Structure formats: structure tokens, C-alpha cells
Amino acid sequence: MFDFALLSMLLAELRPATILEIGSGNGASALWLADLAAMNALVCRVLSVDVNSVPITHPAADFVTGDARDLTSVLPEGALARGPRLVLEDAHVGVREVMEYVHDRLAEGDYLVLEDSVGKVEHLEGFTTAHPDATPWTLVTPTISGSPGTDVDHPGDSRGVGAARWVRRRA
Ligand SMILES: C[S@@+](CC[C@H](N)C(=O)[O-])C[C@H]1O[C@@H](n2cnc3c(N)ncnc32)[C@H](O)[C@@H]1O
Image 1 (cartoon, rainbow, N blue to C red):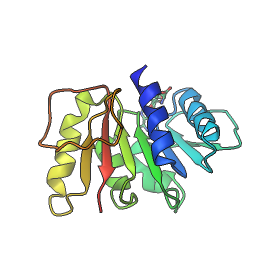
Image 2 (cartoon, protein in one colour; image 1 turned 90 degrees about the horizontal axis):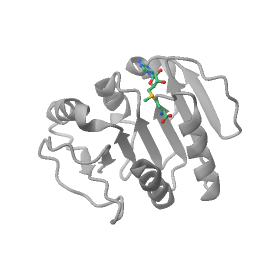
Image 3 (cartoon, rainbow, N blue to C red; image 1 turned 45 degrees about the vertical axis):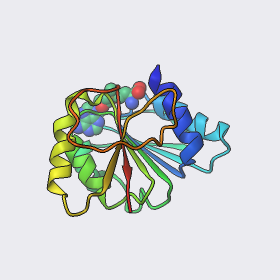
């Protein structure tokens, strides 16, 4: 429920040209994102990856079958070439690999959203520990009352705030 409201706000604010979803499910979320992008008059492609094939065709969404742990092989070169970019990690498998894949492919202001993130804190902490020099990410705690762009520090937060953790690329 919160995600519907927050992602709607984020799309309107970020105006992504590329949305990459990891974990398509039955495809409904990718189609919802494509519809939301159209409602906001965005020129945006949705790319959605799942280990199971999703037999849906849509003018603004591509479904790719493959393993989230090997996105370099699964996704075409340049899959994230067009920004602004929004990446949604919703497979709950290969979280760290997904973070490593997007690390150099996102630019300042782009977002990675870790869905259902209470169990993913260790991946986030492992990632930030492994890349201390880059200090590349800012954790954004989603709030319904404020802008999705409200930054907070990331001290290895383990409070389990919210359903999703949003990580924004810094310069
Ligand atoms: C929580 S569901 C996604 C729900 C969908 N995003 C939605 O909101 O309706 C998780 C999905 O991750 C997929 N999945 C599980 N392991 C995966 C892997 N290693 N690589 C890619 N997708 C995987 C599952 O097949 C499942 O469809």
C-alpha cells in the first residue's frame, strides 16, 4: 500500500527514463510502473527480470528471463544507459549481486529501491563496507508525509524502518 503511494511520488519527482525491476512476479508491477510512467507523460522503458518467464508483451515494458545473480549476462549492454534511472530490487535473491551490478551504472540522483528490506540490511551494510572509498549511496527513508528525496545518513541502520530502503546515487 505504502509502496503504491511512494513509488507514484518518486516517479513524478525523478521522471525516470529507465526503470529496471528485478523480480517480475506475474508482471503486474512492471505494467503498473509502465502505466504510471505514461500517466506522468514520461518517455520511459521498463525492463523487468525474473527467473521465470513472463509471457506478456507491452509497448513500454520488456520482460527478460534470467537470474538476478548474473545480470551482466542476462541484460543487454546499455540496459541502464538512459537516465534518470530507477532500479527496484524485488526478487530477494542475489541482493548484493544486484547492488554490485548497478553500482557503476547509476548516476547521481538515480535510485535503487530494496523492497521488503528488513532482511536485506546485511547486504546493504556489506555493500557499503566493501565500497568505503566510493561513498556512493545515500539511504533515503521513505515517508508518506515528506518528499521521497529526504536524505538520512546510513550508519548501518537496523531498525527496520519502512518496508523498503531507498538508496540514492551520489556524485
Ligand atoms: C516478490 S516476487 C516479485 C513481485 C513483483 N515485483 C510484484 O510486485 O508483483 C519475487 C520474484 O522474484 C523471482 N525470483 C526469485 N529468484 C530469482 C532469481 N534468482 N533471479 C530472478 N528472479 C528471481 C521470483 O520468480 C518471483 O517472481
